[in-house]
Length: 239
Picture 1 (cartoon, helix red, strand yellow):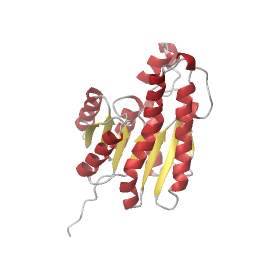
Picture 2 (cartoon, rainbow, N blue to C red):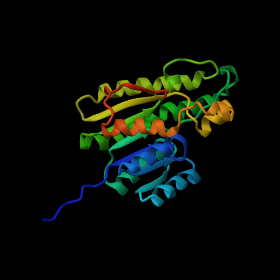
Picture 3 (cartoon, rainbow, N blue to C red):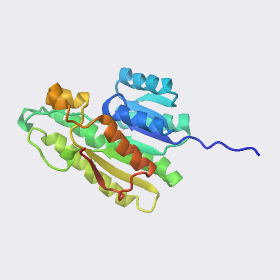
Picture 4 (cartoon, one colour):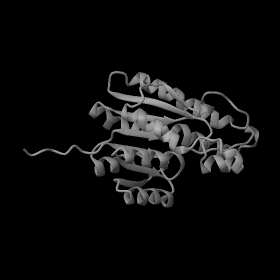
C-alpha cells in the first residue's frame, strides 16, 4: 500500500539570528519543523540557516524588517511559497534602549515602538489569512516581565511589552472558535547579546540569568500542545 508522507509543520520565527530567536528556531527544528528564519541582518540570518541545515533541519532565511509591512508581507508570501503551509509564528524580534525617557531621542522611541509593538501587529495581520484558511495554528508573542510591571529607565520598552501582552489577550479573544491560538511569553532577564549590551552585565551577574534555550522550550511546548495554557494567557518564564 502506498503511503502519503505528511508534510512537516512550519514555524516562522522573527529575530531568528541570535538569542531567543535562534534558540527557538533550533528547538522547532529538533521537533521536526521546517523553519522560516525572519531576520533583518543577513549575516546573522544566514549563519542560523547554515547551522540548522548542517544539523539536518529544513530552514530558509528571509531578510525581514518587522517594522516594514511590505517586508513582512514578502516574507510571509515567500514562506508559503517555499513550504506550502504555516503552523506557528513567533514574534520575537525586539530592540532595547535603556535610558531615562527625557534622554531618549524621538527616533529611538519610535524604533522601539515600531519593532517591539507595531511589528507583532503587522506580522500577525500578515499571517492570519493563511492560519484561518487552515483553521489551525498559533501565534506566540515574546513579551517580557517588563510587560508585567514597570521599571525606571525602561519606560518605552515597558510600554511596548505591556502592549504585546494586551494585543495577545485581545487577539486570542477575537480568534476564539477559529482554531488559531495566541499567547504571550514573558521571560525575565535573558542572557542575550541585546541584554548584555543594554544593561552592561558582568560575567558573574550573567550566571543567574535565564538561558535563551529555556524560553525556547516554553515557546515550542505551547506550539506543540505539550504545555496547556488558556488562550491569550501571558506565560511567565522566570526560572
